[in-house]
Length: 258
Image (tube, rainbow, N blue to C red; front, side, top):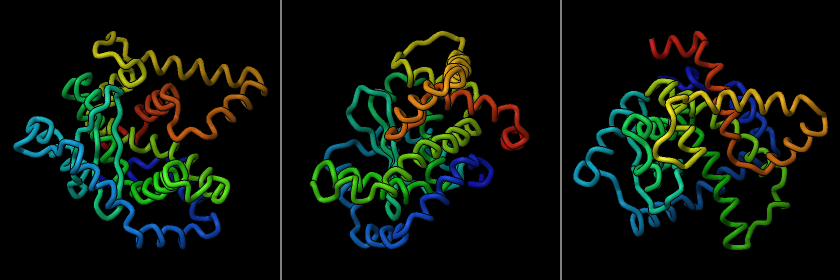
């Protein structure tokens, strides 16, 4: 698989927007020299469970299958203690994937494979560099008090916008690996937090259509929603489901799964 096979146009456009921010390239080099990502690897080794052939072997085998299908170098995989369904990837030189205990417990095998494929999609599209910068800015501001958001407001907002659009490319990767319908099921569980859901997995797609209609019904509603989501790092789940449904009928999707 190639990044160009799954890259969403809005994701690619957002990356170009980040690169156009003055000082962005210089800031990237500074972060890489600092080696800030090493702190997270230490945290993983200290407090999370590393998934290997000897530890959670079934999950590790699923992960190996995903990595081989996506065609990336195998990152480290960790499980962390959190009842919320979540997963993330981090690091540019020592990339890892972390998945919550909530995801492991509530997703079935194929859905869990889809969640892992989503994170591997981020790695394939080389999102990890920008994710590392964005998380570092967040942590340095929130935990260390070193960087206030206003100091890097243009870059910070650009990264927030890109982070939302990057989800669309990673969702496409998951759909290619496990099938669009299976990943739609995973999105329903991600939205509801439930272990068992109904078989009507396109409920989020219908909600996405309703949400779009709601925003179009009034300029004020649209302004409200756009402003509300401006500082979100994740795109609305119904929007992700709808975008994935649209891609399902495209040549790009059929070529990848055919």
